[in-house]
Every structure is written in structure tokens, then in C-alpha cells.
Image 1 (spheres, rainbow, N blue to C red):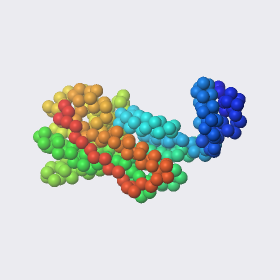
Image 2 (tube, rainbow, N blue to C red):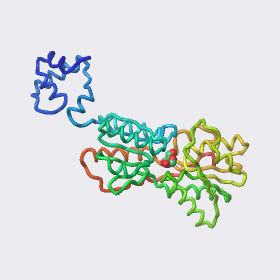
Image 3 (cartoon, protein in one colour):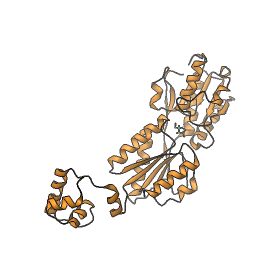
Image 4 (cartoon, helix red, strand yellow):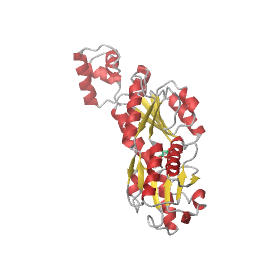
Length: 322
Ligand code: XLF
């Protein structure tokens, strides 16, 4: 593999000059720069990022922390963010928490060890630890503290929209399968749904899911224990759990939407891979991801962020389950 020493030899310059050029750490004449560039091109030299990071005292690395990528919404978000990070010339370290505090702590330690320059964290748990980090952080959904920017969807409004849509489609016996209490955003979805029901003078039932359902999981306990024939409308707190629920209903012989109408939340790509295609509340994943990225890059560049919370509007996507 070509080294800085080889480039110095082939360009007839000193190692110090080549190193200054590669690390952009001091003056190099334009004539020397073009000699170095042509050797770099001819030899296909790839800089050692670790050495460069040590030299520049900046790792050019960003941490992305997700619960997991089994949930298609997070798979989409991590792809958009990862591409943006790469295009900006940074490397990515992708970590998973599985929504566990201990695993999240390990991820934070790992990112500190790699001297990341910033981090986007989704559904964060250890708020105090995160608030004490000495690099910029953007949080998706969890409010950490006034100094950490939070990006989130308008979850409350999304909950209201889900109720209004089911109501307009004639549903009066409604169930909401809400997210675990620890998922801050899903509490707002639930509040929106309940407030909208109260405004219409309707009582609705609420059950709580234990976690994000994995795709190939057996029927989760909470689903097995619900008498779905009591209901004609169902709002599930995210698409992955909604699709699992639709599957369960279909196996039990329910016709969707004739027997029961169903609304999810996210508008992840899987909503159109199933029959019937899922009606859902879209949280625009591209807008969310780019808001996280742009705020983080601004902070890494030494800029300040004036707004502590960015709220992204949601949309009702009507498909075949309603
Ligand atoms: O944390 C919430 C619940 O699940 C998140 O926005 C999601 O909707 C992603 O699927």
C-alpha cells in the first residue's frame, strides 16, 4: 500500500511537505501541491483516516444511534442520514440500543472512545449522560435538555388525524394500540387520539404494546389477549406494529377494512408491500433526517442553533385499510 513516504520519494519532496498537504496543516506551494496530487492520482493513494484524525485532532466521524434497523422507519432514516454524512466527508459509526439503557450507555462510551465530532440519537434513554457529552448532539424524539436540539414529528396532531379519519370512515368502536411509556413521541400520538375522541364525545379503548414488534416474531402477548371483534376501528402507534397486527387479524379471519379499519403511523416503505396497502400517518422521513443532519453539521462547524425543538408536520396517507 502506498504511504506518505512513497509519495514523498516519487514527487521528490520531503515527507513533511507531503504530510502538510495531505493534512491541510500548513503552507505548500502550488507547484509542490500539483506534483503531490499527480503522484497521489497515479498511485491511487488513500489517506489513513486514523492517522489523519490523530494528526488533525478531529476524527471526521459522526455517530448515529438507533434502536435497531428491523423497524423499517429507522432503516430508512439511517440510510438517508448515512448518505448525507458520507457526502459531507465524514465517516459514520452506526450503533444500536435495542431500546435498552445499558446498551445505549455502551454505545455512548464507544462513540466517546472514537472521538466522534457529533451524534444523532433516536429514542434516547440516558438523558443526563447525553446532556454531559462534550460533542454536539441532535436527538430525534426524546427531549434531553434546553441545550440539545430535538427533532420530532407533530405526533399529537398525527394522533388527532388518525382518530378523525377513522371517525369519518364511520368507526365508533375504537381501539388504540399505544407505544410503550418510554417512547416519548408515542405518548403524544395517544394524547392526540384521546383528545380528538373526547371532542366527539366518544369513549375509546387503549392497550399498550411492550416494544417494536420484530417482523418474524410470534404473535405478541398483548395482541393475543385483545378481543378484536369488539372494535370496528384500530390505530396502532407505528407501522411495524401495525403490520404485525394486520397479519394477526387476517390470520384470525378478519376482513380489512370491511370488519375493522386500520391506521398506522410512519408511512414506512413496507406499507405498500402488504395487502391491503396500509393507511397511515406519514412522518416525512427525509425532512426529519435532513433536519437532524443540518442541525448537527451546523453545530459541528461551531455554529449555534437558535431553535431547541424542530417539529415536522405529518400527513394522512389514505390507502386500502380504511
Ligand atoms: O418512537 C416512535 C415509535 O416508532 C418512532 O417514531 C416510530 O414511529 C418509528 O417506527
